[in-house]
Amino acid sequence: MTIHIGLIGGGNISETHARAARAIAGVEIAAIYGTNAKKVATLCREHGAKPYHDFDAFLAHRPMDMVAIGSPSGMHAAQGIAAAQRGLHVLTEKPIDISTERADVLIAAAERSGVKLGVMFQDRAKPGIRELRDWVSTGVIGKPLLVDARVKWYRPPEYYSGSRWRGTLALDGGGALINQAVHTVDLLLWLLGDVVRVQGRTATVLHAIEAEDTAVAILEFASGALGVLQATTAAYPGHPRRVEITGAEGTVILEQDRILAANLRTPPPGSSAGIAPDENQSASSAVVSDVRGHQALFEDFLQAIEQDTVPICDGHEGRRSIALVEAIYRAASSGTAVVLEKP
Image 1 (cartoon, rainbow, N blue to C red):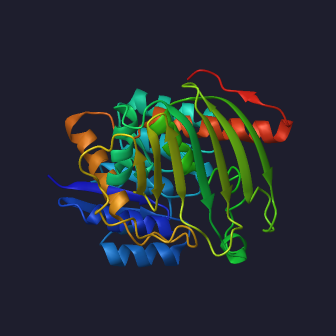
Image 2 (cartoon, rainbow, N blue to C red):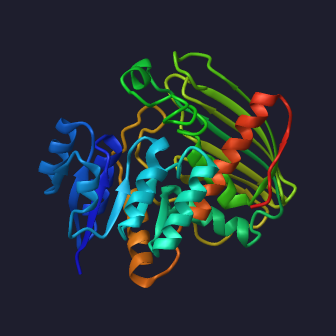
């Protein structure tokens, strides 16, 4: 059976979506909607799709089974709701939207329409990260005590100046925290569980943008573990994302999406150390050249449709990272600690 996918957006990430989806047997790109006619036309020529500049006409295209949303973050919920109401499954780029309020409306719309809703946190599908989660959940590292997560990336001025939405509150929802670091926020929640209290500071230290380009947060997890999150797009030339987790039985370091070091009292047999690391230059570029993570996420979502199972990151899971990001922003704005509501 052939699965027909419609792409929403004509930018770099939609090109990634197209390449990742077409690497899967039995998948075709049916249609592409976007506001930039030139980019949409180019994508359609490359992937054999029909171009659309009218959103309603795009949603009416058939055959089409699902949409992959790659538009600005602040448009995800509205476009996803419209697609769900047409009976289309929805796989949206991170974040699910820029507020929990909008996320809730999208989740409810998908449930009412009986369609699958997934959020593209492809880290959850990567072998090294899945192995680390197994180590945490099975007690290999012992009781989690401390986590240090660093997203010290760099984006040149034209990354923002050449975009109508990046770094804006209306369409990006913020800056380095909600855009670049949201993958790491989701990762920490997936690995270590809920955060119950946060403190935070944000600043715009380099770029001429409305939102922050630097953020720091102190996280208190329900488990009792403490964490520090650093996020920036001002750290020239950009450094690989690094997560260090210390438990009662040792410390594990994750870098470039693979386990870089594991200093454990009782090392587990076997390791993913030999698996090729993620080759995307995310630290210094927004372009996603290595589509393996996205491909794995598409494969998981298509399996969820076929077998009527829950995607690896459904709407409810995707909402968790936005709830934490909102709390960090509130803490930074108020200058006081913020207690998170129970999900």
